[in-house]
Length: 336
Image (cartoon, rainbow, N blue to C red):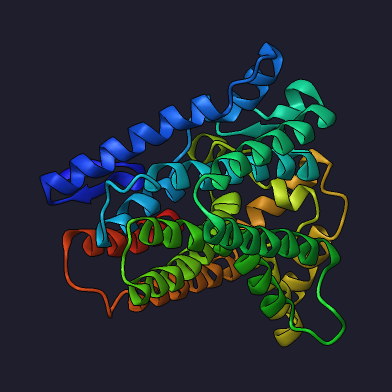
């Protein structure tokens, strides 16, 4: 049993290990090629996050999903490059919106070059992804366009907040389905689709990816509160500082409204105050880390990971399926 890829994924079959490793190596080469420009400054900005590394979670899912058809089919690696370029582009934009200073353990693009360059670099990556996508056929273009629409819709809904009478937790989970679940689902869909897998297999893997993507983001929500910058590669509590209510905060507010406990209400008031103040921010992180709401968010993460695992049931037993099941466990492990 050999460890490959992100999260220390264990692969039992040498042929599968070789396919996954070769695929991820080819994706890395494709990312560097796709981010080259005749203008050296653009190349530097576009490759900033590529060279910073990352888990390559979405390309890994493309490679594993392709095992249910022909993993050597010509569209598999380019489709993985497309989903990772799209993901990277959203990170450039997210960091501008969040005013984040650190990404993947290095200075964010907006901190290094300013917001305008960061936004335009994200746009450049979207353009390069579209260029590759055009060679994969109209169906691939349609699938990516629908996912991108969902992704942007999720971001808008997050910014706008829930409508009156809408449960904030339900609203937030819908947001995550768009912002994160959509692109992870497309990763699985592209891998299966480009490999020529049966349509029922494509559908199963797409459903798996949607649920795994939400679990993955919920784990990130927990990490944003529970981890330090060394563990996550990002500044802890970035969402708190920006006033973005992720699931631990929403579970806290839900509990405060239901039980009316003074300490819960006081913590809600602290979170609603100006957390650009370092002392307040540190106190809010300390209290939230010890609060039952964080554990509730962990349980929500486990629930979505279990739903992803259950979605795989119709697939035949094989090493690729076992690896996909392991990813469900790895996501839960990230959340503690």
